[in-house]
Image 1: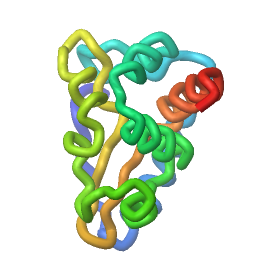
Image 2: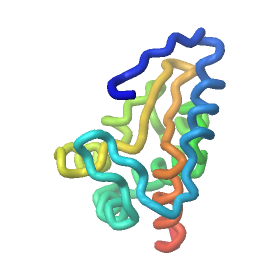
Image 3: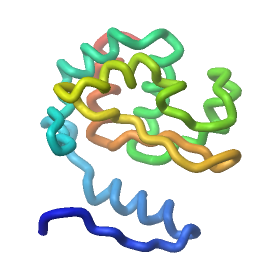
Amino acid sequence: MDGDVTITVPAQHASAVYELLSELTKTDGQGPTPPVAGRPAWSSQLVKEARQQLGDQERELALRVAESRGRRLPLSRLASDLGLPDAAAAEHDFPGLTAYCAPADRPAMPVESGGSGDDAWYWMAPAHAALFQALAQSAGT
């Protein structure tokens, strides 16, 4: 099947659908993540390059999102620890990563955000999270 498919899901079941999709798209972390159309896939080398563009707080935030292993990470858990505003805004909270991902010859932004107010969250695909975590472990941070 080519093209996009739209599925309507009642709001109260959206998180369950995201968790199911996360489980269905899990990889073993051994290979590159499938790329977004027209973009290269994330690899260990690309994560290393991107990580060099991040400040300390942004690096900590990216690692915390990666550690959630494909589950939504509520912004409320991060706001007090890292001094984040009440709204999830990847462009604001991940400026180095956003800038790194901007050129079309780079991978797509690995962090997604959604919700608002008390329901705001960040999310990273399990395969991307595994790459970010592996690099953090090898770097000792």
